Amino acid sequence: MSRIALIALDLVAITILTLGLYFPRHRRKDMLVAYIGVNIGVLAVAVALSSATVNAGLGLGLFGVLSIIRLRSAELDHEEIAYYFAALAFGILAGFEITPDWLAPALMGSMIVALFIGDHPRLFGSYRSQTINLDAAFVDEAQLVLRLEELLNATVHQAKVRRIDLVNQTTLVDVRFHGQKGAR
Image 1 (cartoon, helix red, strand yellow):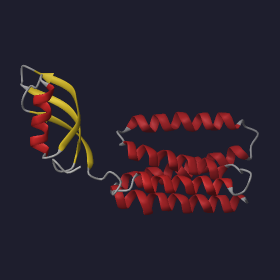
Image 2 (cartoon, one colour):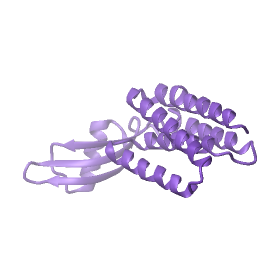
Image 3 (cartoon, helix red, strand yellow):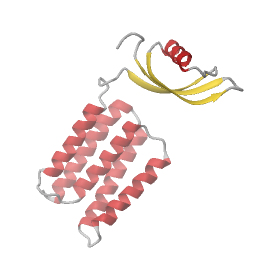
Image 4 (tube, one colour):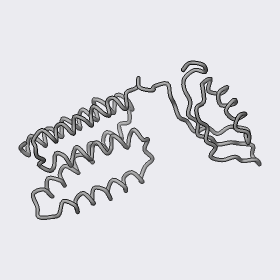
């Protein structure tokens, strides 16, 4: 596949990823800029590295370091990390000529399909996760779960206590729950 065709494919893929999937589902404009920027930046560096005598391993190592720095600079949800790495992968796949010619488009398409399905709102849409700071110190897990189910009007599947403050009578808990209580 020609370099121009790969670059055009990358632009189509990142547009579908950001404007077709991510933004309609998550509504974070700031992440659109990040995904598009990292994709185009990685594409540019990959194209430059593929036509230079520089070792491709050096370039891929650079991408890894940059992604770690970016991921540590702001708190991202797990879904946003998946989109972030897809944007990186699109740039890498389009920046290097891969044989056979159908492989890069197939890999890009499979990532889009995987994110379409894996992040679909109807797929486990009633399952949620939340961090809650309760106004009581719960040392008994059964009582904690009962209180959470009452507050959330949902079935609690997991309650992980992060902190119990006996002085201020608070409990910080990560809770995973499902829809309305009794509806499975």
